[in-house]
Amino acid sequence: MRRRLLLVLLSTSMLGGCASWFETSSRPQPSPLTAIHGSEKLVSKWSASVSGDQSASFLPVYSQGSILVANSEGRIKSFNADTGRVESTLDLKRTLTAGPGVSSDTLLVGTADGSLLAVDRVTGKTRWEQPMTSITLESPVVGAQVVVVRGNDDRITGFSLSDGKQLWSQAHFMPQLTVRNTGSLTPVGGDVVLAGLSGGDVQVIALASGNILWGGVVATPKGATELERITDVVSRPVYSNGQVCAVAYQGRVACFDAKSGNLSWARDVSSSRDLAMDGNNVYVSADNDSVLAFDRTTGRNLWKQDALKYRSLSAPIMLGRYVLVVDAQGIAHLLSNEDGSIVGRAEIGTKGQSAQPVSLGDSALIQGSNGRLVMLSLGQ
Image 1 (cartoon, helix red, strand yellow):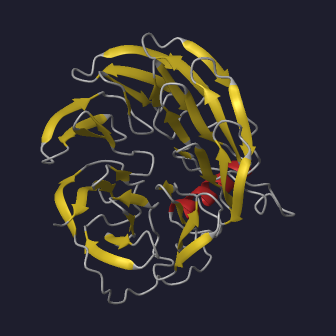
Image 2: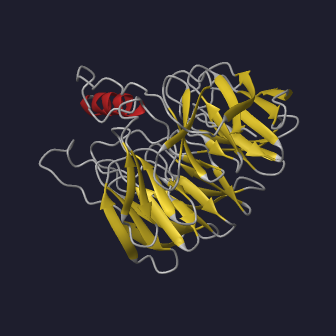
């Protein structure tokens, strides 16, 4: 019971963007916004209201011109990505613990009774159901014909997409204290999945066999107490142009050679949110809400933007050539990728801690904990 209580308290503070463990700890006041002299406009293409639980586990998904959004009551809505109009609604009549994974014609969801459920994308009819060793708090990921799920017990399992047969399963060491994990798997092509792990490691896993192709250390636990030694990778590792990069809470950001697993560079920074990458840089929202850019080749810190500290920022994503972050007040901030200066700003109404924004190239999908879903783009 004591361990569960500690996990709950820690996850509550982390989901609020605060690095402090204690609920009664004081957090610095959000940095006040100052006037900007940017010329880039942010335009809301459309917005919609999404009912039910909109925690970080229920990430919206883009697929085949549609946006799919689930809630804990088991309803999955499909919105037209261009107009925001509701295309369809499925009611699975099951309690869900995370948003859907998507293949061309199948939706994959985790249920509160510890099952992985595959349903027809159009009709909602169950195709197969398989038990898991624990519930999952993150969306299943699909690569080729394999569905990969990470349970709340840190077990990663691969199932056949066609019939639900378990293909492989990996157990991982789970430290005494961990940060709540709502997304740490990234499929790459149809061959591998990247996995961020408790304790500061990242692995590249073969989808077909579950074999570990290589593993790397993002951060090493340090300190005298279990609390000080938390260095979990609880955000999605990123692959781009031959590199795999990841960041750990109370740890480092690190990039590895994708083929060999050799460490290219690492720099001290703590974050529990996803990274963003472009052709030249790696971008991180630190736990104090500073936004940093590192050179992909050398790891050199190129710039640091402190004007948004303690505003409970989302993870950064790329919007065109710019870096986009959203704060808990529902304000989107557009940063220059060259020097980190704020070049655009807009109120978009996504109050509360946002789920991981979804980059769609020249558009971005943002979902707030208040149930507001917004498609954002650069103005003309």
